[in-house]
Amino acid sequence: MKSMEYREWLDKHVKIGKEVLWVTQKEVEEMGIPRETVFELTEKALAYHGKKEVEMPAKIGIHPHTQPNTLMHAMPGYIPAEYIACLKWGGCFPENRQKFNLPQTSGLMVYNDHESGIPVAVTDAVWITKMRTAAVSMAGAKYLANPKTEVAAQIGCGVQGTEHVKFMELALPHLKEILIYDVYPAAMDALIKECQPSVKAKIVKTNSFEEVVKGAETVFSTSTITSSPSPKIKDEWVRAGQTLILVDMHTLYDDKTMKRADKYLVDSIEEHVYFESIGYYPHGLPEIYGETGEVVAGIKKGRESKDELIVDNNTGMSVEDAMVVKHIVGLALERKIGRLLPL
Ligand SMILES: NC(=O)c1ccc[n+]([C@@H]2O[C@H](COP(=O)([O-])OP(=O)(O)OC[C@H]3O[C@@H](n4cnc5c(N)ncnc54)[C@H](O)[C@@H]3O)[C@@H](O)[C@H]2O)c1
Image (cartoon, rainbow, N blue to C red):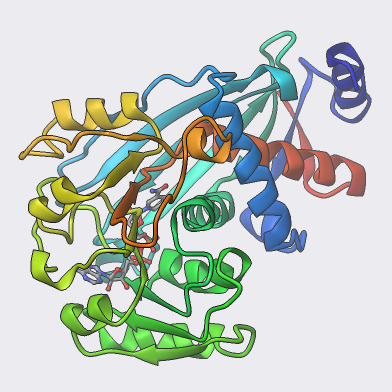
């Protein structure tokens, strides 16, 4: 479909400039979009980013002092080839669960007609964030980990950790065991209850950072981002051949481990350099080998030998949300999900 044809299709369903489509969190969840689809869309987003075929400035944000380590980020993204222009406005408030019985991650997406700039849809961003973040980690695993990995680890068993475990076998089809660890044992029990029925690999609780890291070849971490790292994983527990995939920046790892990795990748160099400038990497960023999207696009090599220690540090990019929200808006309009509101 050409750009103007897509616009005409949108305008047939939402009167551009007069109406806006509103789709709730429950409606997004109930669309039943398979993980395979999100994985495919996310890989495409990473490849566009790797080839520099997107416009995506580094996130800007505010940090309300109502709780420690809060962030609210504005994340605009433009993918010309897909006719997508949108914005995510998302927050992370780590104490929400204890203080308000609310999740730490929240947000909305605004989806625009890229020809006129007019907003055409607003959707919840929680499901999108949960799914595409896990999918990015899996893209990291697909290109950077040993594809025959039999034991993986999941550190942090909240919303992200649970979704990561549900996604893992798409990237690592030979998994026999998934070791898990969380500072709250109840979070591990809840993850097993939620995931084990559909996950083939056996999910096994561990008792310490040492046990979980030493026991696995590919290690995912989705704990809490703290503005300065508070390492829990000693450098000597990390060995050659492992792949460490982080959505929680350097929170858990020793700076030495990050700096001795044979390959250290990030999703967006611009974003991580910005985070460094506001204090998130007090010891400085390691030398960056490349961006995750460059490996997905085939511009840079992924894993080249079984002994490489590889770190992939992804803080999330708007172009990933963008690919998924376009799919959601399309399905909502086709299936008449959501409601049209006056603009
Ligand atoms: N990179 C991205 O694109 C992206 C996107 C969304 C969220 N995140 C980050 O993912 C992380 C998890 O988000 P969530 O929605 O799953 O939150 P959540 O509150 O549902 O889960 C966090 C889990 O980590 C556990 N945890 C906290 N500190 C820990 C520690 N030191 N060691 C082990 N476990 C620990 C908690 O007990 C909890 O189970 C947050 O840091 C968030 O900022 C990243």
